[in-house]
Image (cartoon, rainbow, N blue to C red; front, top):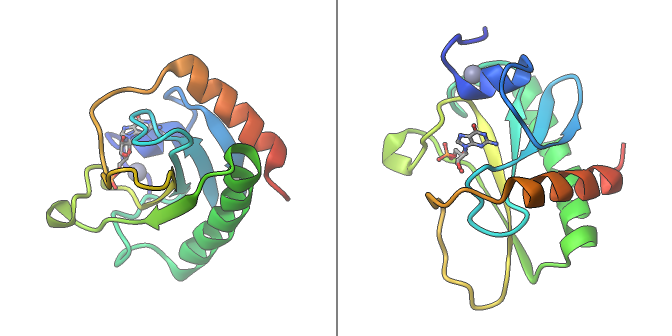
Length: 139
Ligand code: 5GP
Ligand code: ZN
């Protein structure tokens, strides 16, 4: 069920701006607006489920499949040293948006580890990345 005040539901409904990379029946992939690293991408479910415990198995499987597609696109486009994939459940685990999503974060060798930043990404860069990644995402 959709949630009126949820920012990711607004994105799913097309009511909030988004640098979109990919979408299918169950998922959307988009650039994180506060990217910790260049290329930081989120895969979100279309359904509103707060976390891993509430999301349907069908949606979770679809997120995994989309994450793999986007991971390949990130690898082919940005050639990072590594790719960190993570997903947070509950405020105590660091979750800040309570609509299920997975993070894909390209990482450079030796870079300090961080899960969040408050520095917004350059909108132009996010749009450019979304376009480049979209062209590399396999169907
Ligand atoms: P969490 O902490 O819940 O695992 O991650 C939420 C992520 O969503 C954060 O990395 C944050 O930067 C990102 N985020 C928050 N609001 C928006 C938004 O309106 N659009 C996009 N694209 N990302 C958002
Ligand atoms: Zn939602």
